[in-house]
Length: 207
Image 1 (cartoon, rainbow, N blue to C red):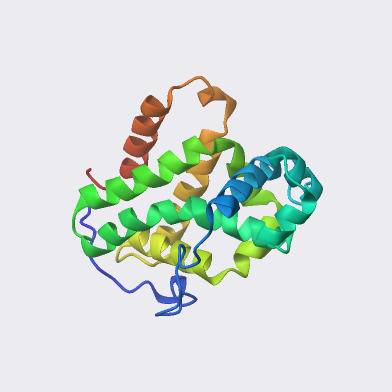
Image 2 (image 1 turned 30 degrees about the vertical axis):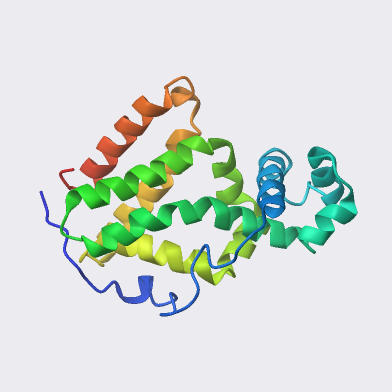
């Protein structure tokens, strides 16, 4: 099995500005957190374009003005919702960066990614394919920075096309598996274990 060591990943991480604020830099109030969570569920069901501020207000049981007081645009709610979900990856990502030669740190990071994907499986499709979300995330530097860091860890020292295709396939596979009807009845714990085992094998790393 190959050993994973520190490496420069070239242009994969070039867009991650050193010193730029990461996910979690913005502090949200309890009301904003609740609004973002409710909105995220609506985005999964209706899409961002199909979800209005009034719909979010109705789901919360408040006025549209109350929602507008927390977030002045629907796009700001999208960014907040994604930030609040993906910031959960930061501790495992920090640990994996600090222990690049430790397969258990990589396994822990992948486990957090898988947990997030399984726990929010209804949102995987919208996050990957909703045109509004895709556009906003492409412009959201903290998200781009986090993804660059994640891909750098998964690539290790291998930055050739083959390695990039392998990591891209793994990233796509996790999202595809958790939403596939064949795994709909598999309990979270078992699905997580199976996905983690296959992911580590795919990366050719012993966990």
